[in-house]
Length: 413
Image (tube, rainbow, N blue to C red; front, side, top):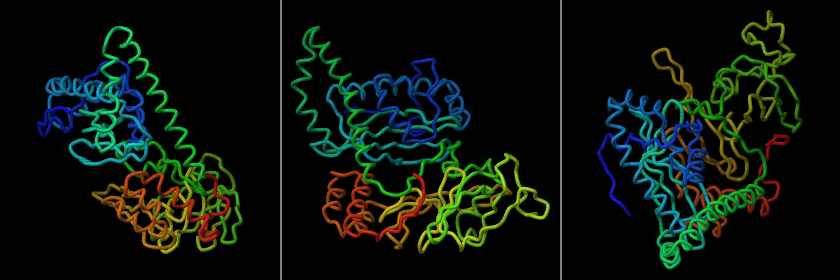
């Protein structure tokens, strides 16, 4: 569709020209950023970097701000060309999963953000190329590339309408109206479809926190709340849900191999004062300990922690026959403590897939769904996104094998 400047360093880290003085909304969540960028394509400048972001990139890479600005002008022209292509040819569909690819962590974090779509013709993607994450937010890179089989058919089917719209003043007004209506309809269809799919979910579903900088653990852990008494609850093996004020401890006491031996520190009240978990005799807010072997799950600090079968204590992100959870591994380096954080996927009590390197491939999910070949085939063909396929598979499994999935009783969504 176009030729792009592929200068190795600059293209990987540069951003489109700033068109507005208003700063973009800050977010470290690449999915939220991608949705925002797509829904505001007509005003693409709003998702571009501000002066502070350019300065940050310059400091990290050694490339002068002036040089970055020159490259930006070319990148912004490409972005606008891409938006025109998408709007004129009606490259719209039902949004599916969003993922990062071609991730580079240094000298600044860059990645392609791939947004998967389906329509009645086939599957396709919007690839937001060379997006950049600074110390503040994500920003657009140098392109929005529609890719996939579903794109070519749409272009052919809409070509006649495009030519008509380009003829005369009235035709141009009609074309503008169509573009606006298409964007509105796109958002409505996507929202309705996602709601209908989510209605099939059963069990607990986590809500990640906004990520702080490049620290992935901050999506599931409030490190600034350690030792604070927080309102929560725990669930016994017989399914009894007990409201409690729980001392929020470091991740290794809640998640991982050591967590099983670390009892919950139960407090008398949530008084906004840190507790001394090592000296119960002198801690006035201490009430009791609850050993982990007496419970199956507990909720505190906005996340649900559970003892996953054949795995151990993890942060629950979704439930079902195919379910997901987060592992956090403490890493000591030069007196600095960080937590390697990654999501894993498991079917019932089987193998847990996913590691620090990355998540399971589509082939793994096809194997997990082999007992329902219809859904597996739709995932393979691209008719269903992975997100939708998992939800539909879990719904099918619950109908086919009632009570086989052991959902955590009383866990609030």
